[in-house]
Length: 255
Image 1 (cartoon, one colour):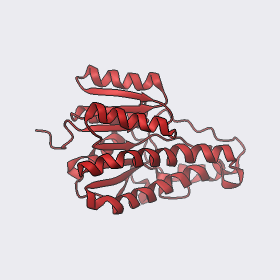
Image 2: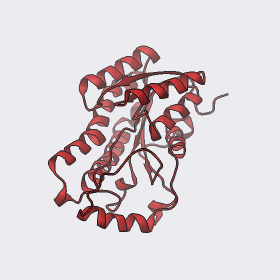
Image 3: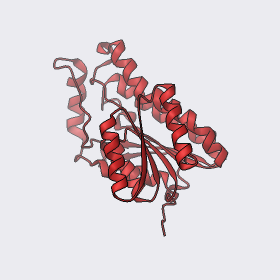
Image 4: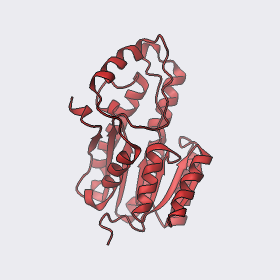
């Protein structure tokens, strides 16, 4: 018997072409869920789907920019058509900034990071909510960051975007708990993924942040460890967990 309550559920995972997103999609599928993989990377998304199907699971992919309303509409429409609804939404897709301090953050860096890390999950969550409300239940899990808990883990744009995600999670939890919808987030510490930081060599921000990060982090985590926390928060095992920000960081948040 599946104790997580995820068997047969329709799950959308963004940023699932690689890293934490792929590990999360695979773990949901292992629990018996049907998974929609959403990502900009067509090849990676298709590889995730193939891996799920090879293991006997059910998956499909939608490729596109999730800050585009048309792509968001396609994700929700295809999930509802294929799965009968969206029981779980994992807002995982995100990008790093250049570790820039505010004074050296240009408009392009700011707008790109906010658009992908904050606006895209806002749009997708807004589109999914009516389906969860109609069902009277649902779980939404965001990938926040250690940078959502402190000011010394990234640049201005990324830090602001992830702090905003935490606020969004808490507001969602309060606003929709009466309708059976839960919202939570993980706050990953350093995790082995393919995300790269294009920090300016002589920039002020990376020089300051680097000192704090180097002094306070523990070991490097794995994508599978982050995925396990996401699936837990989405599952029946966390049925009374709502509005929580769970550090998955080998005690970095405790330093």
